[in-house]
Image (cartoon, rainbow, N blue to C red; front, side, top):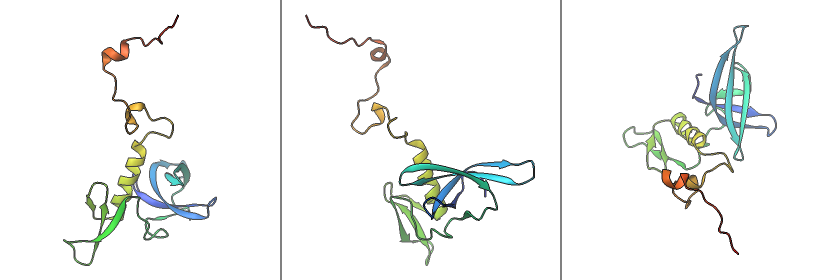
Length: 145
């Protein structure tokens, strides 16, 4: 397993397996490797660091078989009879593997601002960014007599 791959991680606090993205691989002085993975529990970002051979890690599809990233659907492949593709219903793009679909999902999650930290320009229906002249102009409240 390498950085960026999606695997499964077991959360003891929820007693459940989750798809997780490997964010870091660190070599230890004893020759073992520690994997740091990121995953989500009810939209809350979680992180866990465990040894590569830990029983709380598994290849994608081992325990979460059939779980798809939000917004994805399976469809029969038109070019590979008897196989499935993973359709991103948002964009209409088809992906050949579940690994690719989950990688895209985690990339999208990484790009969104943390809750409460979205700028006005990022909020749907928000005001477009100010021009540089507008940004420099002071905005004083009106004074009333």
